[in-house]
Every structure is written in C-alpha cells, then in structure tokens.
Image (cartoon, rainbow, N blue to C red; front, side, top):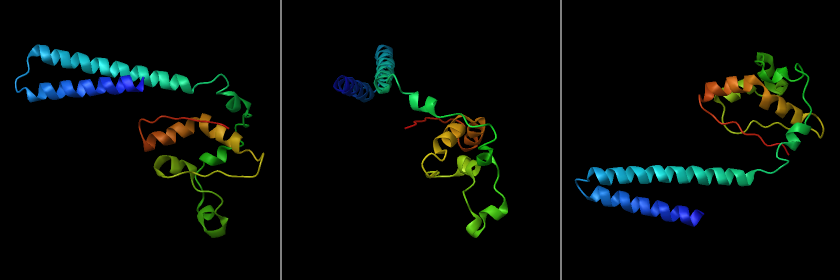
Length: 149
C-alpha cells in the first residue's frame, strides 16, 4: 500500500512539473491536474483511515473504563488558581495546572505512590470540561487523545 502510494505521488509530481514547464497549459490539462489532485487527496484519506483502523483493538477502552469515577469535588483543586503562599519556597506542592494548559510548555508531570489516585485524577482531568476551556485559550483548534495503561 505504501509503495503504491509512493508511485502515485511520484506520477502526480511528474505531471505537475510537465504542466508547469509548458508555459500555456490548456484547460484540459488543468482539469486533468485538478482531477489527479482530488484523486490523490482521496487516496491519502483512505490510507489514513486504514492505518487508524489497524491501531484499534477490541479492548482499547477497557483500562479507561476500569478507572473509577472521582467524586465531583475530590479533584476540583486541580483547576483552582493557586494562592501566592503556595508558590513560595518549600510550600510549593504543584504548579498551576490551568495556567499550564493555557500557556505552558513541556510535560505536566503527575506522580505519586501506587494506588494513590493518579489514574483517577487523570480520568477526571481528561473528562472535565475545564480542560477543554483552558486548552482553547492555548489553541482554538486542538486534538485531545488519551491512553490509560
């Protein structure tokens, strides 16, 4: 499939170059080029779909569904603005998560002891509407993906 895609792309490039070399392409050549570009787009979409389908497996959501739902108020602190005293010296326990969602870079690291609720917190963050609200301030269009293991 990949080799076939490469061959089609090569042919399309050659056709485009031949038309570009011709200083006055006819309407028929332009229409042919347009049709080939449309065909190329359709092929790319088909390949993308097939690749994504290959990544699916029957139990893909099983771990996510196993993680218990947090009580609505248990993790609300993650979206609250941190007080000045928390930012000072030894009192700093975590960085401002909403601020990181809106303008941060790198990885927001969440760690803890075994069975301390890390997965439950992550599911809460993943599902909470405030996550999308803050991310839209960072990027109007974004794609959210999650994997629980």
